[in-house]
Image (cartoon, rainbow, N blue to C red; front, side, top):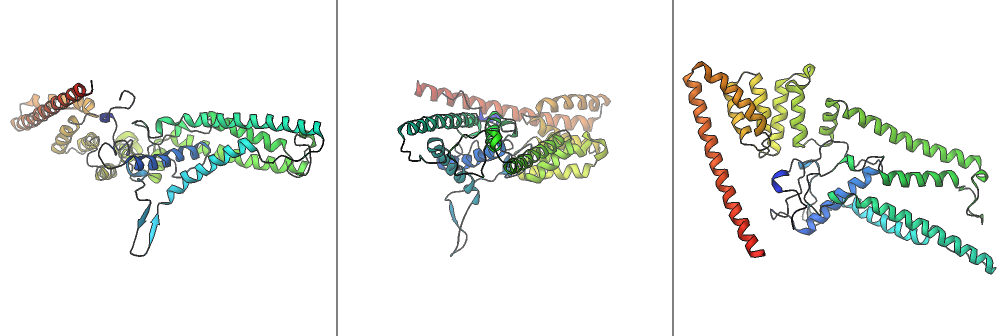
Length: 381
């Protein structure tokens, strides 16, 4: 009924570049399935500490370019190429199929036993182990179900989010814990033993040392990764630097990085650098209207008042910055008009005429949209 997806006006390519491709006629459902299968695969790999793209607090716009169809693209008259990113979801599908097979059959096949009682005991053990494996598999798939919001079935503002798949997630803890238990309680030096459930004390010291080293390397890798990423989130400059390194074409990262140089971090104050970063963001997507508020902020500090006024008007026309822009607008013109300057008054009148004209256009567009929606509802109901 359309009540679950977020309205289009609240999502932009800066946050989720794929959300409206079908509505705009740019994609078919096949395009959407292929591209979101890659996005879903990125989350699965992140949950196990494997970074395919790199760390970024924003993955919007062209950080993750779309996978185009057909899959095989002709690069010249004699050569063809395929987007290698497709290998990631395909590999995970093969992995999941392998998990299902493992959950049912296990690692070892059934050995023939002549004794009836031993055969019955072996069958009972195999059934018990199969139930355990199937329960683990269902737990794993239940965790995968938590990734439903970013699987592409609904329109949401979230695109790629580390918070959904950090190393402390339920799924990771369950399966990492199970893997550690198997490593510490299995002796891989004696595969010929008939006793599959030999006690931990019977494991040879060599096996214990080898498994302990593997466990140390794994936990050390995750600990370093967690420490480094936590440190980046505690420092704005490190966070923006890592984001721009992973996603140089991220609009929001460029815009937010410019704020560091425009006064947010006093020791980094550099208005020319701030303007360059704002320009990068605007060149990536000219419709991203948030840049005008930041332009106005920089121009005011440079005392370029005419440019400041023009950008502030654009910020007022942007639904995402109009609140802050209105506060600055009222304060600025209260001071400018108090001196009775006729030139300033003329500029103010010109700006107000433009704003009123844009408001009338928006009201007319909203009325036409409401009429169209009501007509559609009458047809449906």
